[in-house]
Image 1 (cartoon, helix red, strand yellow):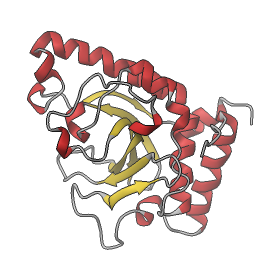
Image 2: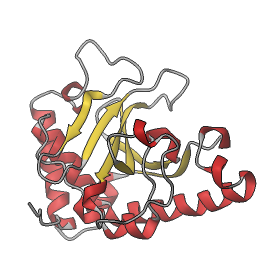
Image 3: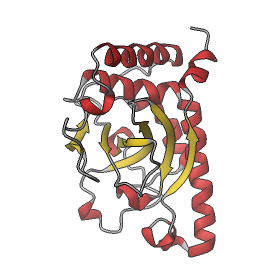
Amino acid sequence: MTIAPITQIKAAHIVIETITAMALEQRPLMLRVVPENGANFWTHYPKADARDEFCRARWYYHVHAPGDRDPEEHGHFHLFLHRTQLPEGLEPKVWPPQREEARAHVTHLIALSIDTRGIPRSWFTVNRFVTNEFLYPADVMIEHLPRFNVDHTKEDDLVNRFVTAMVALYRDEIADLIRQRDARHAELIGEHGEVVAYEKASGAEVLSYIPIDLDEKIGSLEL
Protein backbone atom coordinates (compact mmCIF):
# COMPACT_ATOMS: atom_id res chain seq x y z
CA MET A 1 0.00 0.00 0.00
CA THR A 2 1.40 3.40 -1.04
CA ILE A 3 0.67 6.22 1.41
CA ALA A 4 0.70 9.75 0.00
CA PRO A 5 3.12 12.13 1.78
CA ILE A 6 1.59 14.75 4.05
CA THR A 7 2.08 18.37 3.03
CA GLN A 8 3.71 20.76 5.48
CA ILE A 9 0.49 22.76 5.89
CA LYS A 10 -1.56 19.62 6.54
CA ALA A 11 1.09 18.45 8.99
CA ALA A 12 0.90 21.71 10.94
CA HIS A 13 -2.87 21.35 11.30
CA ILE A 14 -2.48 17.75 12.52
CA VAL A 15 0.16 18.74 15.10
CA ILE A 16 -2.13 21.47 16.45
CA GLU A 17 -5.13 19.13 16.43
CA THR A 18 -3.40 16.25 18.22
CA ILE A 19 -1.71 18.38 20.89
CA THR A 20 -5.02 20.17 21.55
CA ALA A 21 -6.91 16.87 21.79
CA MET A 22 -4.38 15.50 24.27
CA ALA A 23 -4.70 18.64 26.39
CA LEU A 24 -8.52 18.52 26.33
CA GLU A 25 -8.45 14.89 27.44
CA GLN A 26 -5.91 15.85 30.15
CA ARG A 27 -3.70 12.96 29.06
CA PRO A 28 -0.32 14.29 27.94
CA LEU A 29 1.70 12.42 25.38
CA MET A 30 3.88 10.46 27.83
CA LEU A 31 0.85 8.97 29.64
CA ARG A 32 -0.29 7.57 26.29
CA VAL A 33 3.04 5.82 25.81
CA VAL A 34 4.46 4.78 29.21
CA PRO A 35 2.69 3.25 32.27
CA GLU A 36 0.93 5.71 34.55
CA ASN A 37 3.17 4.68 37.45
CA GLY A 38 6.25 5.70 35.43
CA ALA A 39 8.66 4.30 32.90
CA ASN A 40 11.49 1.87 33.48
CA PHE A 41 14.70 3.48 32.29
CA TRP A 42 15.86 2.35 28.82
CA THR A 43 12.80 0.15 28.23
CA HIS A 44 11.19 0.40 24.80
CA TYR A 45 7.58 1.59 24.84
CA PRO A 46 5.85 -0.29 23.38
CA LYS A 47 7.94 -3.39 24.09
CA ALA A 48 8.13 -4.61 20.48
CA ASP A 49 8.03 -1.06 19.03
CA ALA A 50 5.08 0.60 17.30
CA ARG A 51 5.03 -0.70 13.72
CA ASP A 52 2.91 0.69 10.93
CA GLU A 53 0.91 -2.17 9.45
CA PHE A 54 1.15 -0.85 5.90
CA CYS A 55 4.60 0.69 5.36
CA ARG A 56 6.49 -0.94 8.30
CA ALA A 57 7.97 2.36 9.54
CA ARG A 58 8.16 2.34 13.34
CA TRP A 59 8.78 4.24 16.53
CA TYR A 60 9.60 3.55 20.13
CA TYR A 61 9.82 5.85 23.13
CA HIS A 62 12.15 5.53 26.07
CA VAL A 63 13.35 7.41 29.13
CA HIS A 64 16.96 7.81 30.20
CA ALA A 65 18.08 7.62 33.80
CA PRO A 66 18.58 10.91 35.69
CA GLY A 67 21.99 12.36 34.98
CA ASP A 68 22.06 10.77 31.55
CA ARG A 69 19.71 13.29 29.94
CA ASP A 70 18.70 16.95 30.03
CA PRO A 71 16.54 17.46 33.16
CA GLU A 72 13.91 19.19 31.00
CA GLU A 73 13.45 16.04 28.93
CA HIS A 74 10.95 13.38 29.91
CA GLY A 75 11.95 10.97 27.16
CA HIS A 76 12.35 10.70 23.41
CA PHE A 77 11.11 8.87 20.35
CA HIS A 78 13.41 6.99 18.01
CA LEU A 79 11.91 6.95 14.52
CA PHE A 80 12.79 4.44 11.81
CA LEU A 81 12.21 3.48 8.22
CA HIS A 82 12.16 -0.23 7.42
CA ARG A 83 14.67 -1.42 4.83
CA THR A 84 11.79 -2.53 2.59
CA GLN A 85 10.90 1.15 2.20
CA LEU A 86 14.21 1.69 0.39
CA PRO A 87 15.04 0.48 -3.13
CA GLU A 88 15.48 -3.29 -3.37
CA GLY A 89 19.11 -4.32 -3.40
CA LEU A 90 20.39 -1.01 -2.04
CA GLU A 91 23.43 -1.69 0.13
CA PRO A 92 23.77 0.14 3.44
CA LYS A 93 26.73 2.42 4.00
CA VAL A 94 27.49 0.56 7.23
CA TRP A 95 26.20 -2.84 8.31
CA PRO A 96 25.58 -3.86 11.94
CA PRO A 97 28.67 -5.76 13.16
CA GLN A 98 26.47 -8.70 14.17
CA ARG A 99 23.85 -8.82 11.41
CA GLU A 100 22.00 -11.77 12.92
CA GLU A 101 21.28 -9.61 15.99
CA ALA A 102 19.80 -6.79 13.89
CA ARG A 103 16.61 -8.63 12.99
CA ALA A 104 14.46 -5.47 12.90
CA HIS A 105 16.09 -4.43 9.60
CA VAL A 106 15.56 -0.74 10.23
CA THR A 107 17.43 2.45 9.50
CA HIS A 108 17.24 5.26 12.04
CA LEU A 109 15.69 8.44 10.73
CA ILE A 110 15.68 10.89 13.64
CA ALA A 111 15.01 11.18 17.38
CA LEU A 112 12.37 13.49 18.86
CA SER A 113 12.83 14.73 22.43
CA ILE A 114 9.74 15.44 24.55
CA ASP A 115 9.68 17.69 27.60
CA THR A 116 8.05 17.00 30.96
CA ARG A 117 4.76 18.58 29.76
CA GLY A 118 4.53 16.36 26.70
CA ILE A 119 5.64 19.06 24.24
CA PRO A 120 8.35 18.45 21.59
CA ARG A 121 11.61 20.14 22.57
CA SER A 122 14.31 19.05 20.08
CA TRP A 123 15.35 16.85 17.15
CA PHE A 124 18.63 14.95 17.10
CA THR A 125 20.52 12.23 15.25
CA VAL A 126 22.52 9.46 16.86
CA ASN A 127 25.49 7.33 15.95
CA ARG A 128 24.90 3.91 14.36
CA PHE A 129 25.58 1.87 17.49
CA VAL A 130 22.80 3.55 19.51
CA THR A 131 19.99 1.78 17.62
CA ASN A 132 22.00 -1.01 15.92
CA GLU A 133 20.73 0.22 12.56
CA PHE A 134 21.60 -0.46 8.96
CA LEU A 135 23.13 2.93 8.18
CA TYR A 136 22.35 4.54 4.82
CA PRO A 137 23.86 7.79 3.53
CA ALA A 138 22.12 11.12 3.93
CA ASP A 139 20.97 11.43 0.31
CA VAL A 140 19.13 8.10 0.53
CA MET A 141 17.46 8.96 3.83
CA ILE A 142 16.43 12.43 2.68
CA GLU A 143 14.97 11.11 -0.57
CA HIS A 144 12.83 8.65 1.37
CA LEU A 145 11.81 10.93 4.25
CA PRO A 146 8.28 11.30 2.77
CA ARG A 147 7.79 7.55 3.23
CA PHE A 148 7.81 7.84 7.01
CA ASN A 149 4.28 7.26 8.26
CA VAL A 150 3.20 5.62 11.51
CA ASP A 151 -0.50 6.46 11.45
CA HIS A 152 -1.45 2.78 11.46
CA THR A 153 0.30 1.21 14.44
CA LYS A 154 -1.62 -0.45 17.29
CA GLU A 155 -0.66 2.36 19.68
CA ASP A 156 -2.54 5.53 20.64
CA ASP A 157 -3.97 7.17 17.51
CA LEU A 158 -3.16 10.71 18.62
CA VAL A 159 0.46 9.77 19.29
CA ASN A 160 0.79 8.02 15.93
CA ARG A 161 -0.64 10.96 14.00
CA PHE A 162 1.39 13.49 15.99
CA VAL A 163 4.67 11.68 15.24
CA THR A 164 3.92 11.30 11.52
CA ALA A 165 2.93 14.97 11.25
CA MET A 166 5.98 16.23 13.15
CA VAL A 167 8.30 14.54 10.66
CA ALA A 168 6.36 16.02 7.74
CA LEU A 169 6.32 19.49 9.32
CA TYR A 170 10.07 19.48 9.98
CA ARG A 171 11.18 17.59 6.87
CA ASP A 172 13.66 20.31 5.80
CA GLU A 173 15.23 20.58 9.25
CA ILE A 174 15.48 16.80 9.55
CA ALA A 175 17.22 16.66 6.17
CA ASP A 176 19.78 19.19 7.40
CA LEU A 177 20.35 17.18 10.57
CA ILE A 178 20.97 14.00 8.59
CA ARG A 179 23.50 15.85 6.42
CA GLN A 180 25.20 17.09 9.59
CA ARG A 181 25.20 13.51 10.90
CA ASP A 182 27.15 12.35 7.86
CA ALA A 183 29.56 15.28 8.15
CA ARG A 184 30.20 14.35 11.78
CA HIS A 185 30.75 10.73 10.74
CA ALA A 186 33.41 11.92 8.30
CA GLU A 187 35.16 13.73 11.14
CA LEU A 188 34.97 10.63 13.35
CA ILE A 189 36.46 8.49 10.60
CA GLY A 190 39.39 10.93 10.43
CA GLU A 191 39.83 10.68 14.20
CA HIS A 192 39.21 6.97 14.81
CA GLY A 193 39.11 5.10 11.50
CA GLU A 194 36.25 3.44 9.59
CA VAL A 195 35.38 0.76 12.14
CA VAL A 196 35.43 2.70 15.40
CA ALA A 197 33.74 5.84 14.02
CA TYR A 198 30.28 4.26 14.05
CA GLU A 199 30.59 2.41 17.36
CA LYS A 200 30.46 3.22 21.06
CA ALA A 201 34.25 3.35 21.30
CA SER A 202 34.16 6.59 19.28
CA GLY A 203 32.64 8.36 22.30
CA ALA A 204 30.13 10.08 20.01
CA GLU A 205 26.45 9.35 20.58
CA VAL A 206 24.48 12.46 19.52
CA LEU A 207 25.79 13.74 16.18
CA SER A 208 23.48 16.67 15.38
CA TYR A 209 20.79 18.58 17.24
CA ILE A 210 18.31 21.46 16.94
CA PRO A 211 15.80 22.83 19.45
CA ILE A 212 12.11 22.95 18.54
CA ASP A 213 9.95 26.07 18.82
CA LEU A 214 6.54 24.93 17.59
CA ASP A 215 4.97 28.38 17.84
CA GLU A 216 7.71 29.88 15.68
CA LYS A 217 7.58 27.05 13.16
CA ILE A 218 3.82 27.08 12.74
CA GLY A 219 3.77 30.88 12.75
CA SER A 220 6.15 30.88 9.79
CA LEU A 221 3.56 29.08 7.65
CA GLU A 222 0.52 30.56 5.96
CA LEU A 223 -2.17 28.35 7.48
